[in-house]
Image (cartoon, rainbow, N blue to C red; front, top):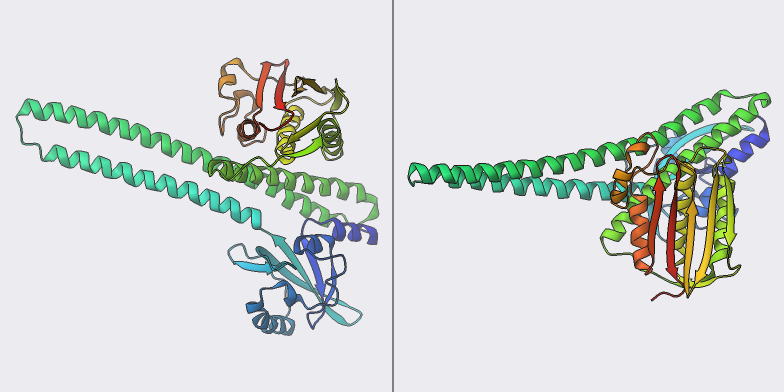
Length: 410
């Protein structure tokens, strides 16, 4: 692998890399580090690494650093160790850090790999909240069952009255057991889905990284590029999954509100499609048609970006390569209509009434990656913007989604 390849991996890595000398002076920091910590390019060079730590930990870290320099050794990231870093503006955030070292011109240099795990911590908090709620409901149902049985034991009336009471209690018990079964199935489905969807992209990352390490000659540089692309794709998939869970949690807690700004919607759609083409599937053609060339709207741009990104991603995901995705916009009486049509597998008739429910996925897409949250989030964002969404679909013939939005937020 030539010098340019190593430089590309250093500069475009989605993992922070810092190289420091024996005194802890930063010699080099890749763009990801400066972006995450809020510094200008090369601003960190010449500073001690402790500048990236909370003030109350800096003096202690100097001792740790000196001990490490006395006996350097590769140290992997600790998944169960809570570490904090500090941005230039003083904001702290959780990280994972691994260390290694190498010799250069007789000098020993330390390489620190830094991973921002803010989004992971948020996802873990959401999962913990789900678990606690389920456990609370189990305790409540168990108490109800115990109270019902206690009441039955203390019934001293005649045999007929006792039998009638027993039948009522047994009916309540069956109902509670059915409710308990539904709660357990919900928990099991969520845990299984989350585990699978989180591990699959991470497994792809680790496999590709391992393969890259084996390609050491210029002749196989194309293979290295392919696996780097696989890494980026897997990271994007994981990020999208985390974003879905975080968006759902914020919506459930009522922390999301529309923040409208004025912008050109047709130009925004054209730019979004170009961005999607650059990092999306190359096997699909995207055809755009605007009835009006310039449509100025006063709406929440980030919400519209999420809606459009989700719908165009679904159109590509559920359509075979070589097909065309059609995007159309039209302005009618201060209402914008956006239509996204694919030529994919379509939605079975029996599943269509559940399409916007959370965690729901149609029977014909279970072998494709997804959380079943995207369309639920899309509909809730449109509700916040006084918009609406509808669709028509036929199995194996494709699907057309239609979004309507007022030009100005009502």
